[in-house]
Length: 344
Image 1 (cartoon, rainbow, N blue to C red):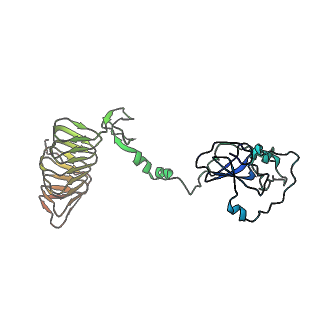
Image 2: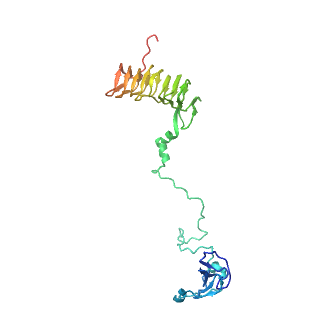
Image 3: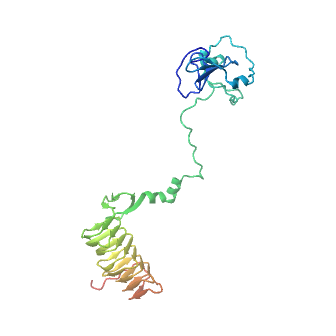
């Protein structure tokens, strides 16, 4: 119950400060006692008197001791009231209107006025209309090129998103997507596969792909020919192999068929016997090999390597501990294929 006007209103149980909804005075609730001050929502009608009533009985109570002993509050200088008097119920909006401001209008700006090129202050009609679109992004300086541009210039963009492909029929080389599983040659229109092949059991299927071929330890491939990019053999293969990349062997046993590749490697722990000739550009032997090797480049026999057979190459390098049990022929030309026998 408001001690000033006697109006009753409902408030939460834990409320401490509120305003009277009828007269607008400030109310303080403490220990079920309501104390009213003369301060309203609009800030008008400041007075010294405080009135206290019981929130339950509505009876007027004595002033608190702190209010009795507190020194009187000096009143601020009152400005002349406007011609139109305001009632406490008008609220804070009416107070702002009396001061010449609307509740929605922002406070007056103190920023300096804009001046045009001629030195005159700009009016609202002279200002350029603003747009909600973001400002245009300035073009990068020539010396600060983007990372994507640098990748394209250095060729990294093509290597990351594209891969090389070569047609089996016409030999045309072109670029294709990194995740492509097959392709058609742009020159002759031939179709060929780009998928990788993995063999972990006995297989007799002809392999012809520009992907990689992996023969597991339990795998055995017996077919007429194998065409691939890279070959990695841990099992047994009986076929003529043509690789555009590397041919790596780490197995034990006999390999039937010619091997033609760019780089031929026999890793440590292997013991391989090649019953047909091996043709490669570069050769690296790290284990025991039996067979005939033709190379257009370097043949390197490591300290743990051993070759039992003839080697024909442009250069042969044998590290300490390596062995070559056979003839070593050094040629100067690019072709190391032996000449056909007379009458053949």
